[in-house]
Length: 105
Image (tube, rainbow, N blue to C red; front, side, top):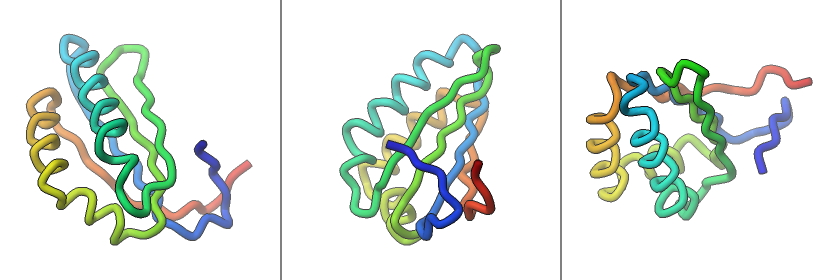
């Protein structure tokens, strides 16, 4: 379960995907499959959540990792490189950004 805390010492990654409403469901299914089948089994994975906006034009993924290196190793795996090529065909683009938790209420 996701827990956002200022004391968290791992790596937080927020990825935003931009797409059209026509591809929103396909993209969400591809992301859910990637998490269920690959990502959540990777070393250092802690938790994640997927969010979609009302207009179905953006998906946001919030994930927590034990370290930046664990996240980067997952991205470099052959399975995720292949999946990310497919995911890229379903959206206008996506950008993972690494963050530190600066505060939580």
